[in-house]
Amino acid sequence: MTTGNAIVNVTINDIPVSVPKGSTLLDAAKKVNVYIPTLCYCPDVGCGVANKPASCRICLVEAEGIRRGRKVLVPACATPCSEGVKVWTNTARALKARRTVLELLLSDHPQNCLTCTRNQSCELQKLTAEFGIREVPYQGVQNEIEPDTSSAAIYRDPSKCIMCRRCETVCNRVQTVGALTGMGRGFNAKVATASMIPLAESSCTSCGQCVNVCPTGALTGVSSVDKVWAALHDPKKTVIVQTAPAVRVAIGQDFGFGSTAVTGKLVTALRKLGFDKVFDTDWSADLTVVEEAHELVERIKSGKNLPILTSCCPGWINFLEHHYPDLIDIPSSCKSPMMMFGAVAKTYYAEKAGLDPKDIVSVAIMPCQAKKYEAARPEFERNGIRDVDYVVTTRELISMLKLAGINLSLLDDDNYDSPLGESTGASVIFGTTGGVLEAALRTVYLHLNGKNLEGDAINFRAVRGLDGVKEASVEIAPGKVVRVAASSGLGNARKLLDMVRKDRNYYQAIEIMACPGGCINGGGQPFTHGDHSILERRAASLYADDAANTKRLSHENEAVKALYDEFLGEVGGHKAHDLLHTVYHEDNRV
Image 1: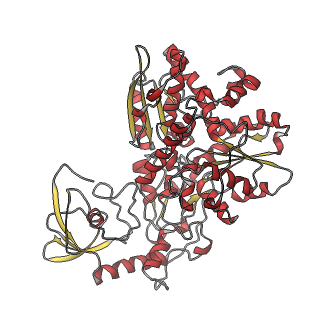
Image 2: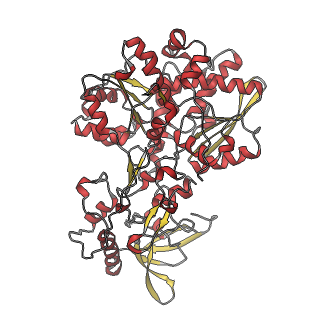
Image 3: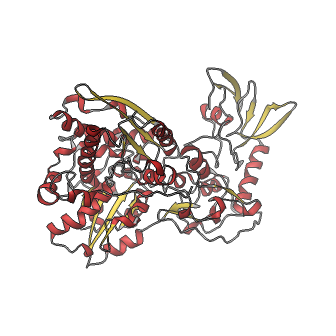
């Protein structure tokens, strides 16, 4: 955290460095490329003066000038820089203290790392290797605590919790959900839900941001991978798969592609895994725009039930149902692209392909933990048949590919199958914050003007970027200006929703994504470890795909047009509403 333009001068290992007032010793060390190990420090939030759990003490350094007349050990992540302070990160005292802290953490931690879901990506394991610890000299009380398996999205293993409290920081400070808190004392201390109730009974929204910051295996996603493998090996089943837009710019991270879209190679890889048909969630994102834009235009014309809130993100919808039940009437009734795809695949596509819906296994590759929760919601089942059977996250798909010996870097590109594989540029930008709103505005413009946007006007740049809240006034028709906003991160959503509670007439449309940055930073994506530049590159790649597409308006998707001509009838009609729309439920658990 910084304050004003004041500058503070300190030295780190005899290297002078000037930092803004309010910076921590860890900030100063980073500025001169001095490494200090951390665990409780949350790169996505920081600690600093305002956010200072400083609970692990792995970042202890020796400092002079903080307490008069002597050197003291202080946590670098939560100690503010003050003028003239001298810091040493590698003294014998500091190194011994860090090692002792780590040994004490390990004394109460399960040793079955080989079977842990975070093996080779566990930060505690990494530090153990860095410190050269081969034996743990202390014996803690390793209580056998039953895992919490209540959630359809998040698996909680309290025995692996090291009380770093990063999950609590993200849940409370970034997402403002308040589902997690510190419980107990001594060896019984763990981060848990209030009153130790099951996660599924708490205010948890399943966004998965706690999973993204957990340094161990205490929080992981609920996995359906074994069930997907079983379906792929069942000759009686037709297994189809859809891939979300944010997946294609993240999955290459583990195969040397960075944040470049690897769409064609992803299609090839899924075929090699054994999927019978490989389809694109972008197709149903276009379908979502067509339905949602129609809904928005109707509301704008009538002036009723505004602002419309986008409904593509299940984490945000869960947040609404828990925390804002009084606003439950204003989100779009459109299902998310994933669920629209699922419903269409087991009706329209099943009919065209001559398949019994009971024999279709529908798998979705998503960047999100909350999508697992969404697929399990009871309203997304028709006559005993679920719209989407299994959700696999980007991280889980990477594991599947590696198990099967499939390396994306060695594959040629291939194309999605038809008819649920065609898409426009508008659909691919769903993967980043502001993308859903921009895609919808492109089609709303047609409805209100009778013609398409052309040239650079098609780019609604005001709603782009990774800022937590973006606002714009958009001239959507001659003399018709609509006020819109896009937010990502539930803490930012809370700010907008509080404004809506006070004045429902200020905005006409609001996009909300639960994860900071949108789906590119979803709870099931490859870890970024707080590197914001990775999200910037993922977003840039999606916008590049949009710009390169010959069709950039969702209503120009020929396969979507065919769906209405052959099956649904009119946009927003009875059949479309029955298949593509849903309802929300008040939930007063908080």
